[in-house]
Image (cartoon, rainbow, N blue to C red; front, side, top):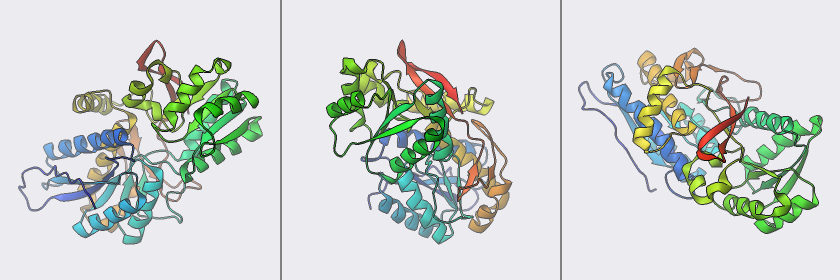
Length: 370
């Protein structure tokens, strides 16, 4: 397995380091830009923990493995990290990959704090070993559906590719919108070209098109086709999964990439810690940090707090999820049991629907808060 180990251990002054495994998509077909932001947040937090004395005098070390959006590769990485003696595993952006990693961590008795994946059913059965910072997909996508309804959209098309994640999103939207007078029209992108999508939108009188597809293909060609079709000048394009969050979106689409609402998990105002971390992340990344970078930082902040309090014993870490009370970059983090969710869940994750301002695509407009 091709791995990308990163050691951030400070000079060892008191025995061996405390190790955390990190799962991050750093190569295609993974969403590399998201992976880079996630890793930047993880690394920054590890460096700050070590600058403050580490884990009771022992340096914290991040052992990074590239998942490349491959569930089997993630499972192999969890096995390897468990053998290496990590105290816990953190990270991952892609929901299907995180689900595979969570199942393996649960089977091995290895604590896993998922940073960024939202699939509701992260594990098949309730588990004590897994906790999550990002909101479950049902909560975020229902907030997105509220935004659509409030904006007057009742006939909503979804361009979908085969995936557990996209199928779950489609089901959430349909179940939530139907009782409220909304209709979801499913477009199978394995059978339609971007140009054909335009004709289907016109035929079905859809006023909104949601991109439940991969980035950059076929999301970018679909946006270009719809934007260039004069019949669809009033059609809203949406991307609940967050593709427009990253700079690559604006680079590939230019003005066409603006005014496309998406979900992100930031509060209206960052905590004082968040404001300081934002400055440090911007310097590290050379661009504005996405919400994914803050998720990475908060992940290490939580694990470091647990490791300081309970040591590197895996069972004690897993037992301590319900006792977490950590001030993160986006609010105080506490984990609880949420109905229908099989892992320990931060129930207070902030949710926004935002878009890029057509007058200034580098600026985000908050359209709705969930």
